[in-house]
Image 1 (cartoon, rainbow over the protein chains, first blue to last red):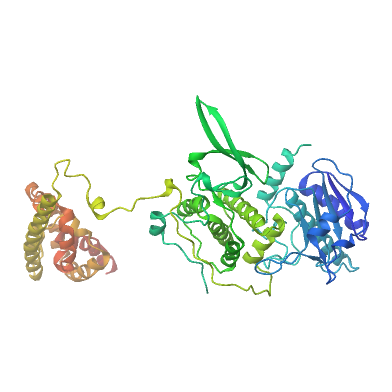
Image 2: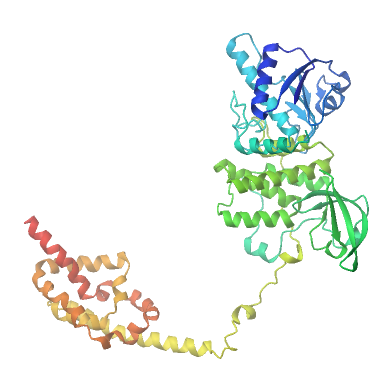
Length: 181
Length: 366
C-alpha cells in the first residue's frame, strides 16, 4: 500500500489523479492519509529544507510492513554538496526503504488553466513514481521516457512521460512480488 | 575534447587492471573492517570462524553484506585470491567523478569485447573499473538501447557504484546516485569543475587473471622439432619451389607477351593453358581492366577466329601441364603472378570470352 501524506496544502483533484497514477504504475493500492505539519527542524539558514533531514523528521504515520509512505510538499529541498557540486533536488527517498518525499517547488506553476493544471499533475505523478520507484530499489534509468530518468536531465522533455519503461517495471514488479506482505 | 585514459588491450590482457587497497592476506583484516567483494558489494568483517568440513578443521573469515545482511564465509587461504579490497577513499571517489564527468565518445561497439572487458573491470578494476563499466554502457545507451543482458549489467554495476560511493562519502544511496548522474548528465547550463580524469591503475590482479607474458622463444617454439619436422628445411623447399615456379612462369609470361605482341592471337591461345594456371585468371579487377580493353578491339574484329580458338585451350589442356610446379604450388606462385604486368598475364582464353559475348552484341547493334 502506498500512503500519501501532504505536508503543505494540495488540491484534492491533484491527489486523486496521483493516487490513480501510482496504482496504475505499481499495481498496489494508494490512499491519502491526510495533512501533517512540516517539520521546521530541517530548515536550513538559506530558507531551504535539508531533504534527508526532512525525511527523517517527517511526522510518522501508521503503516504496515512493506507499506510505502509518500510525503508531498512545496518547499525547496536541498541535497548535500557532492564532489562536482550540488545536484538539484526534486525529492528524496530511502533506497529500498519505506518513505519518500517529493517537492513541487521546481515544477512549472500550477496556474488556473486546464492545460497548466494537467502539466502540473503529470509532473507530480512522474516525480512521485520516480521516488516511490527508489523505495522499490529501482535505480536511475538512461531512457528519458522512463519515470526513473533523472529529473534534471537535459534530455528530459518539458512534459515528460509518467510511466516506467519495461526494465524498470519488471524489476519493480519482482520486488513487489517478493515483498513480505 | 578530453577523453578518459583508454587502456591498451594487449597491455591490459597481460596485466589485469588494478584496484587500490587490494587485500593481500587475511592478516590485513580485522573485525569491523569494511571491504568490497568484487561484483557483490560492500561487506563488513565480523570475525573469524572455525568449521569442521569433511573431517578437516578449516578457518574462515566471516563477512556480512551491509545492504541486506547476507553472510559470507571465505576460507583464510582464499582471501587474497578473491580480489577483496578496501572501500575506496574520498580521494579515489573524487577521481571517479572526474572520470564520469569527462567526455567519452568512443564506446566499444563489439559486444563480445565489451562484455569481456566489462566483466574483467568489475572483478579486478576497483571502483574506477566499476565506473568505467557504468560510463561505457551509459555512453552506448545514448547511441542505441542496451540489450537485455547489458541492461542488467548496467543496473548491477550502477548498484555497486552507488553502494561504494554511498559508504565512502557517508551519504544515502539516492544522493550518491544523484551525484553520479549529476556528473554523467549535468543539467542544462551547468559547467562541472572537472580535473583531468585519473588513468586506470595497473595492478597484478587476482591470480586467475595473471597471464605470463610470452617470450619470443615460446612464441617461436611450436613443438615441431619433437614431431621430427624441420621448419627451416620446409621453408627452404618452399622457397625453392616458389623460385622455380616463378622462373617457369616468367618464361611462360615471356612467351605469352611475345605471343600477344604478334597479330595472330589464335596461336598463343592454344598454348596458354599449359603456361598459365587458373589462378592467374583471378587477377584483381584493376589488373584485368587494361587487358580487357586491349583485347576488346582485336576481339571484336577477329571474333570468328576467337570463337574457334576459345574452346580449344580447355579441351586440349594436357594433364601433365597441370602438374608443373607453378600449378602444383599456386600459393607460392601467386605473389609472382601478381607482380607480372596485367597484359602479359592475361590468358588468351580469358581474352576470347568477352569476344564471344561482344560479337553478337555488336551484330545486334548493327
